Structures are given as structure tokens and as C-alpha cells.
Length: 219
Image (spheres, rainbow, N blue to C red):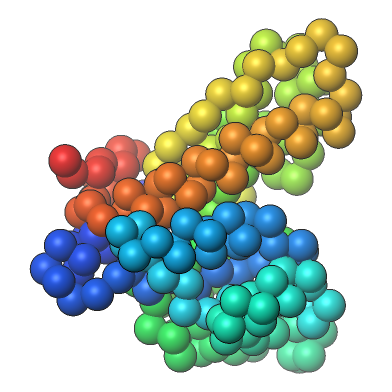
């Protein structure tokens, strides 16, 4: 979607209607989720995680959510006859919690047309490269191989492509001469996590809109 419908997640907070409702989708250990939960414990943050979903039952991040008293759900692709059916089931599971924002925090499955029709323009993802450079699953590896001096992370609105959505925010991480893929990846994760927490809060507290390829946070 080149021009998502303008959204104003922060307006509900400003109007006194309560915090922005967030559903977080995970596939792994939940370090980004834990950081979001820690931030959301402060009522001034403006957002509350209302549910955590995963694509596999053994995710450690589900334990993080349960320990915090957050409802969880699992939608395994293998439990459905095809990807469209899984996408419809995932859409229904997320919609049950009436989120204002849906955040992919290490969710390793690509959602489909049904999900984007329901949550398009308010489904966010974070990627460990400075998009549009190095999309896909090997961002830090490809950045090192190319010889860039700055790597980083991108927070963006998910669309039908692979890491092609409208960019919300980016942060740069210097590439050191002795970096390995592992060391660079770990440093990017730290910056990526901080950026995700900061901007989730900002989108919860402030109104925002998308104009073409530009993501604008008012105020």
C-alpha cells in the first residue's frame, strides 16, 4: 500500500480515552517484548500491551508475557491447510484484542492480504539494517560484506513487500574494523530495541499520519 489510511493512534490518549492498545507478535525470546513491557509499566508511556501472539508454542517470549500477566495466543502455520487460512486465523486472533497498533517484534512470518486489510497502516516492524539497503533476513551480514561504515535499524509500516513499507524511524550503528556478523548484530539489537520502545511510545502519545512515502508525527 503506497498510501495507508492516515492513523492517529495518539489521539485517543490525548482525548483521555485510555492508553493505546498494542498486540505484539513474536517468534523467539522476546527481548524487544520485555523492553516494551518495562516501558509500558509507566502509565505516562501511553501504550499498553494487551496480548502477545506467536507462530510457535515454544517461544520463550510467551513465558515473558505470561510472567507479566499478558494474554497469549499461538497460530502455527502447520496447523492450517494453507497460508491464506493461517492468515485469516491470525487476523481473527489479533482482532479479538481490538489493538490500535500491532508490532512485529521478531515475528518471522510474512502476513497476508487479509491481515493487511485489517491492520494495514498500523502494523509495524523493525529491521536490522538501514532500509532500503539490505532487506531480508541477512542485513548485518550483507552490510559487512558490502563494506559500509554505518549499519543500523529501521522501524517501518508493513506493506505487501519485503521490508518495503513507509519508514517511521532509523538509527545508525557504526561498523567497526574488527566487527563480525555476530558482534554487529548484537550492537544493532541494542539500538533497535531502544528505537522501538521510543517510537511506540511516541505513536501512542502523539497523532501521526502517512503522506505518500513520508511518515509524519505531529508535534
